[in-house]
Image (cartoon, rainbow, N blue to C red; front, side):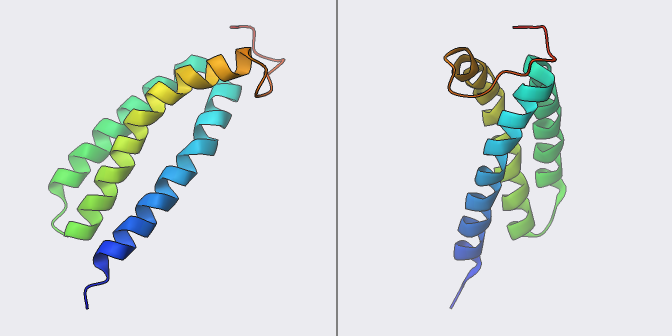
Length: 96
């Protein structure tokens, strides 16, 4: 029985779940600037995914890369959620 599909699915679930608090904390501490970090990380991880020979590792690198790309959009939406009062605003940042 091949279990790799289930393991990739579980790992994908955990990776996506990890990015939710990363977006929240990134927007809280760094604001919109952290979108560039997600972009660079996504590009690097895409490249790594193409270079790795192991299919499972390549798939997980790809999932992580596209989670980074999705986070770029989520950073903007997180700012809107903060403006609506759904999440706390960082009182030390002045870029609101």
